[in-house]
Figure 1 (cartoon, rainbow, N blue to C red):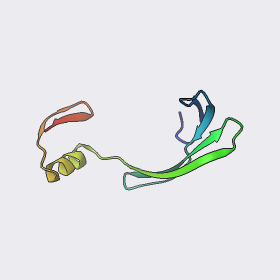
Figure 2: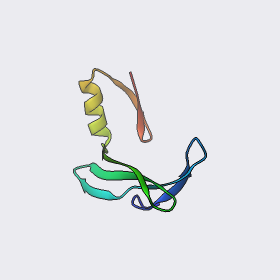
Figure 3: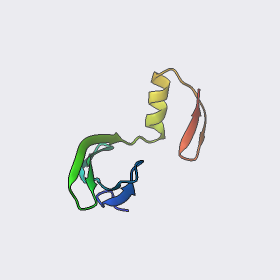
Amino acid sequence: MHPSGPFDVVDHAGRPLRLIHPVESVAGGVVTLTETTATREGEPLRTERARLRFLDADGIGAFLAEAGFTVDGWYGDGCGAR
């Protein structure tokens, strides 16, 4: 699924909704996007802006070390930290 493509969901009360995530920019490992929750007909109910940061293993390891964690091992795309 393309990140900008809308998709339909049903909320906890059974209300059909549409989520839309247009990407504003991708720079330096940071993706800036908005999330619009709308009716299935497209009427916006709420819009929020978000920035997601994606790090490689070295970047994750650096943040963990700075926070006082040690990495016991890397498993696939994740790690076991304590």
